[in-house]
Image 1 (cartoon, rainbow, N blue to C red):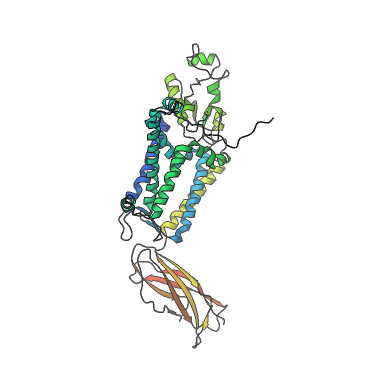
Image 2: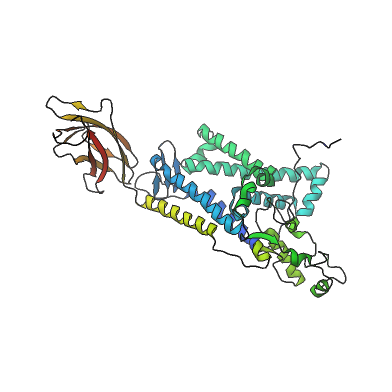
Length: 468
């Protein structure tokens, strides 16, 4: 009878051991920097002539995003599209060069899981103590340590949720209102959802998010090639011809081991114990590996104690492991790098050269034109103005390309807009179309300027319709 295949396998808890080394220091430094940016950024004050004094603020009701001196409006949505394209291309570029380093050092899941494991280790002890605690029956010690662990996780998760909310309003005001029940409902809902998801993802699911939920683990291999740097075990050096062996009598020095055909790996298991996803890097490249390189630090520590060269586990490429030399400049990486440069250049050019006024002109098409009693043709236009500068502007409209044409704005005489303000104006243009006019449409421009001359005149092209 065939064995039944279960669709679900219960999670086997992983208890990573702590390790010291250059990659662990790098991860810690990035973690501290990332947390500092995330939690402190909403509290940074920023002086502006107009708008809030918070450095980064996403003002949904006002439809403005403040990022230091940059103010983003809804019509700048293509910047978001460009940023997402940049993020994707940069991820492909980095992955082609150095594998899954984003996952190992910069991913939110990694950063928060690192902190959760740090708290767990401080409360429950090192790996042997945590394993012993998980296996023992429920008693006072286990209840206390598990309770403190989960309480600390929930505290960090709540701080994460509340920290996210602070980006969407004035941070001091939100905090003072939040704890007295005066904040808006969306603040409590958002903080609650992020608290729950952070607690589950970084505390309860952990490595399962990286191995089963995140799609990147599944398609990363298509971006790898023989020259991609990956965390690898040097099997030739580690196994030798007789395999790995512990440093027992007669196999304690490197010379003795080489004479016996035994490799440098002493089978201590330290590299497996420090792995946050619980894999054995000596089994080769695996999709669960997030390239955090903690196994490199573990192996280097053992090699230092043995007095042997480092690098049994290291960042290297398949080509280098086979005796070749890593090719850094190849078509894929050069192509991705060129696309990254182009996108960055386009985004910077667009941001730095954004005009101080965003204007859009739409011709009213019902009716398309009107024949006036004096023989002139009248067209109507909707002009949408948005002051994207940080100054109060007194707009003035004029025509270019319709000699003798007149502009009628109706009752609108003063077009004064505060920074970020928007206004829609109905403009009527009357023109005595020449008898020799070619076609049924005449191109012209609306010229938008400031009465005080604080901005350069800005032109918007459109067409004047007629039937002559």
